[in-house]
Image (cartoon, helix red, strand yellow):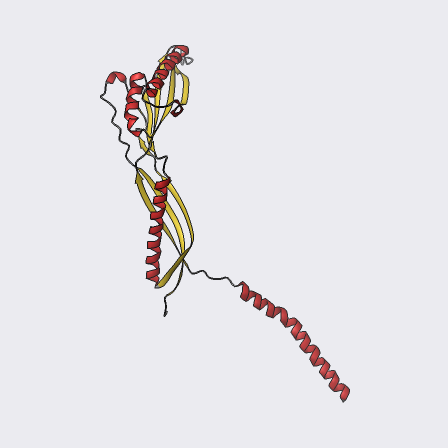
Amino acid sequence: MQNRVRFQTAVLFLTAALLAVFSAPANCAALETRKQAPKIERTIAVTGYAEVLAQPDTAVLRLGVETQDASAKAAAEANAKASQAVVDAVKKLGISAENIQTAWYNIFPIYEEPSPRGEPNKPPQVVAYRVTNTVTVHLRGMVAKAGDVIDAALEAGANRVEGLSFELKAKDKFVQQAVRRAIQDAKRKAQAIAQALGVRLGEPILASEGYAYQIVQEAPQFRMDRAAGFGGTPISSGTVQVTANVVVRFSFSSQPGK
């Protein structure tokens, strides 16, 4: 009888030990699961936008000389002479050499008109050569001189104005101003959302920004003939638009008493 009691006691101890061993991983797994449970972020994300208008500080002109002659050499020589005269005229207005750059230079043949319908086709014949030389002029801090530069270039021999644009080189302070306004816009939106949800808006926990500015384009391409005569080229620079976008994420909490 005593041996039987001892045997039963041993079995109970062994069973308890086995239960402890096999239940421990389950308890640990449950505890680990509770530790790894994702924390739900209570945030409000908004986008703020702002724009600032500024006066451009740089004008970019593309001036061209186009010549044509039966001889490629003659056309090139005439173009070189006229192009040099244009560059000299621009320099006389106080534009430094480093702000005058050749944009492109082309020589290409001009062929005679194709044979009329019904007549046998002839091999294409070159009847002339056309030469174009275009220079880019940067008017840094001299936007008001854009019209004078165009007039001087045309008077000197330029017969093409390929384009005129206005840019803002010193844009840092305008970008910062736009970003500050965009942040204020984001705050107003976040406060409106929090008020509508009945929660208290907290501190910003994440913010990112981006900006852009618009180049003002004028006269994309037009030709001018000195023989036509004109009293001067009026130029209006307008304004450059600097825009900023910010994305801000705010924390929020429940209102007291709710």
